Amino acid sequence: MDHLVKAVAEDVRVYAAVTTNLVNEASQRHGCGALASAALGRTMTGALLLAATLKEKECITVKFQGDGPLGSITADASAEGAVRGYVAHPEVELPLTNGKLSVGQGVGRGILSVTRFTGLREPFTGSCEIYSGEIAEDLTQYLFRSEQTPSSVGLGVLVEKDGSVRAAGGFIIQPLPNASEETLSRLEKNLSELRAVSAMIDSGLDAKGMIAELLPGMDIRYLATEEPVFRCQCSKRRTEEILLTLELKDLEQLVRDGHTEVCCQFCGEKYQFNKEELIALLHVANQLQEHHSNGRR
Ligand SMILES: [Zn+2]
Image (cartoon, rainbow, N blue to C red; front, side, top):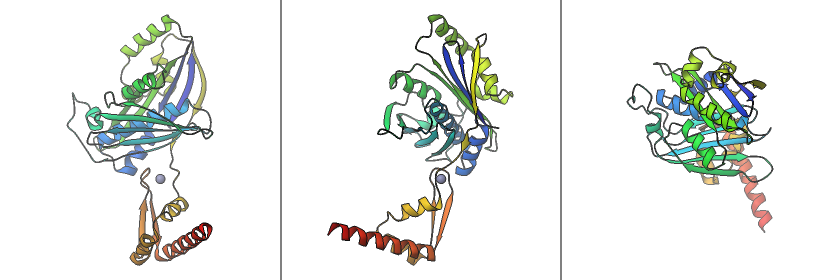
């Protein structure tokens, strides 16, 4: 089962997650090749870990707008552990680099932006240049440069030859403001010797096992375990609302076509509308238009 564990160890906070199932679901929904599975899986896991640092009901959007062949990659995650995401060109593959998927090359250079939705104030967006396109390094750089939060983010996705996701997960470590020099140098040493996240998960470690390997010899206090899932907010009802934003003449054309299919960009879900439903929508759209012009008069 996918899970996310929150813990503190002395003057460090650490969140670790195993996300194999939800990354596999995203990969299948979007028909991702190996490269896109890795890039999207890392981005979604990173978004989940960042969202885990937020308050209840808050959520976050992480967007990589690079010039690489994968195109932009977007992931939304909530503090409660729901995540969704998509990549513009899921089918793209590139030759391996040193035996590894060329995620950095697939993403390219451009802008990484992170938007926090608190529900109270206006959403806040911070951004920075994409550092390597390898996702974890980029998020680490973003947190340091844009939010002045020293952190270390590690992410990994291991993909089978058939494109299915064998292991996925990640961690985020943040020294608390009062962290001692000794802790910081110990962390740096631990991280420099750490094996790849995907290897840790593939060897059977769960999130707690990962935390124990990240922070050997430290006094770890586990705070909470959550179950992150792939979940989209789309529904037929919301899709109707989108269709109602079309111009009347476009809606009339859909009625003449007799059938339309709307595909959710975030999750790949397809919503079908038959002629009767389209006629009903056109009727509502006409009423809205009338109401609108009456209001203006
Ligand atoms: Zn959806």
